Image (cartoon, rainbow, N blue to C red; front, side):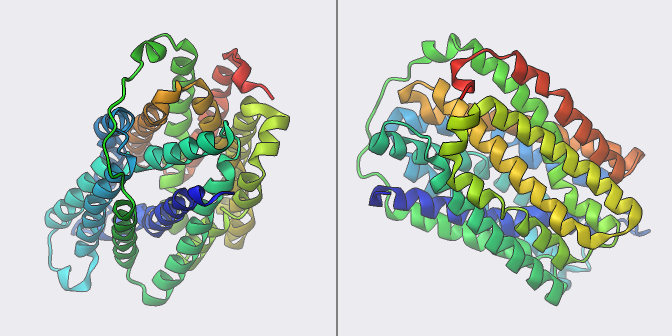
Length: 400
C-alpha cells in the first residue's frame, strides 16, 4: 500500500485503542459507582446515560459530515472533536477515584453526566470521518474502496491491545476509573495526531443533495441499520454488566472483549476477496446470524456457570462484527455520490447512533423488569427479525 494510507491506519488504530479502553467497561463502571444508599444499583440512571451517550451525536454527526464534504476539513474536525472527548473521559473518571467516595449518588451522576455529554456530542462524528478519510484515499489510489479492510484492520489491532491491557490493569488495581483515564488520554493523542497533518487550505465544494433525496435504497437500508443497531449495541454495551452479574472478573471481561476481535484481523485483511465472492448482502446477513447465535450461547454459559467459555464464544463476535461492518461500509460507499462520501457515512452512523440510543433505554427497561439474561435473548431475536429487510433490498451493489 502507498504511504498515503499511513494516516488513516494511525487514526483507525488510535481511535479503537481509545474506544477499547473505555467502552467495554462502561456499564460495569456505572454499575459500581451509581449505587443508592441501600446498595441498589440505579439501573434507570445507567439506561439514561447510555441513551445520552448514543443520542447526543445525532445532531453533531450529520453536521460534521456535511462540513467535511463541503470544505474538505476532515482532519481539522477530527482533531478538534477529539479534545472534548478526552475531557469527557477524564470527567467521567473523577467520581470513581477513592477520594471522591464521599460524594452522593446525585453528585456522582452529575460528574458522569457531564463526561457523557461531551463524549456523546463529539465522539460519534469521529468514526464516519475516519472511515471516509480511509475510503477517499483508497478511491484516489485505486479507483475503488474494496481494500478498506486492509486499513480498518489496524483499528482491530488497536482494540485487541487496548482491551486486554486495560482488563489486566483493572484486574490488578481493582480501580475501574482507570479505564476512563486511558480512554481520555488516547483521545488526546488522537487529537494531536489529526491536527498535526490537518489540511492547509479550505476547499469549498457543492453538495449534490438531489442524489441523496432520490436514494430510496439507502433509506431502506437505514431501517435495517436502526433495528440492527438497537439489538447489537444494547447487547454489546451491557455485555460487561451481564458478565459482572454472573461473577466474571475484570480481566476475563477485558480479555474476552479483546480476543473477540482476533477473527477480525483475517476477515478485515481479506475483505476484498470475501466481498467479491459473497457480496455485501451475504456478509451482512451472515454477521447478523452469527451474532444472534453468540448471544444465545451466552445465555447457556450463564445458566451452567462455565465462565471460561466466554473466551472462545466471544470470538464469534469478531467474525460477526467484521463481516457485518465491512459489508455495511462497502454498501454505503457504493451508494454514495463521490462528493458525499463523508455525508453518507455520517448518515449511516447517525442512524446507528439512534438505534443505539433507544437500545440503551430498551436495555435498562428489560434489565429492570426481567434481568440481563432476558436482554441478551431478546436482542438475539431482534437481530434475526430484521434480516428480511436486507433480503427485500434489490441493488447490484449488494451482490457479489
